[in-house]
Length: 104
Length: 342
Image (tube, rainbow over all chains, first blue to last red; front, top):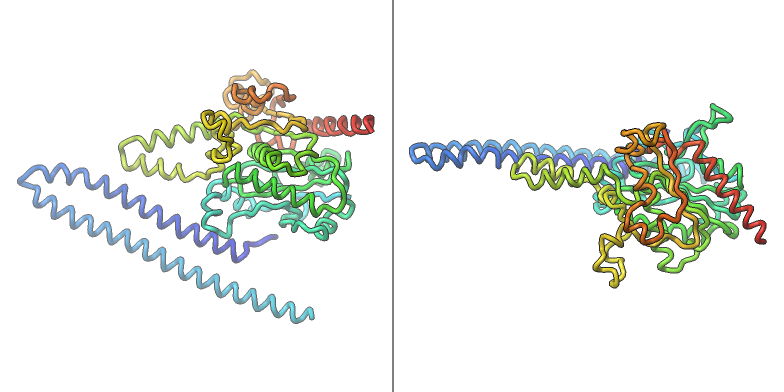
């Protein structure tokens, strides 16, 4: 049965990493836009405007950190996968060379 | 004996190849531009491997090359495995139109695999180049070319014929028959719906619907081209036709020296059943498969023979014994005519 080539495995790694990155960005943007709406209303009511603004900045900062950590974890996982694939490629190359030497 | 492909062997495409082909269909233009190792390069495939276009490799896979070639082009998200079906004469074996044409009429079949997510016009250009390269290294003379395209494959064939005819290359002049099986010449309803849904979601002033719209909009250019059956790039159109851009893009002239056979299917045995009228073969309605539109009629689409196979759904069109009988009869009659002429 045919197996994936290292090149195809790299393709999957790249595709998954990009998908997670783009999905995180899209979700962050959507969540930011949705969360912004109630604060925008509250910031117009002067007795609570100051408090609302403070709460919003705390919430936005936490949200930003959560998404940032997801992106960082994704980058680390991608780099580790790329390293593993490099090792696999080296091993395959050594086996290929050994096979050729035996043939000669 | 010309090359054959059988599902019974380990060399037939497996679920991994199917998954990669589906990913190519959905995101192929992204994979190609990146470039990504999952992107499929267009090539003739033999026993699940790309066939190097050299005289030696062609002789290895086709020890007795004949003067008649049959080129089979699959549809969106597919591969050459779509052509396989159980041999009526031997249930243990799988067979396909190409192998049967080889057995019955002495054709040499070749199966194309390609990245179906790339624009149809780009695939058409690549196929034109690939066929030119094939004829250059083919071990022997070629008298006749028969092209069979399933679904999007038919559009790729039309595009290839258009680009080849423009550059006056040699292979297009050898084409005698082109069979279009469930090809959405006038567009596919599912993509029309997808386009409308995306447009609606993107124009709704809500971040969630916009996000869903953006995700839907990630679908490949190949899929988007199915909306109108676009077979050429706008920038390739002659300046004289600039005012009729949409008109020309989905209705280029048909290759004049070939007979074009437009084959459609329906979901139900009764073609007048409401399900068949609404959904055709499930993905393509007969009027689109028969190129029935005012644009197409201007290029003489109504002159081409068209058939409906009731009860044959979209994917069955690529492996229906009745359709093979029609292909065989048509090709055999040409052979008879050529023999009489000579």
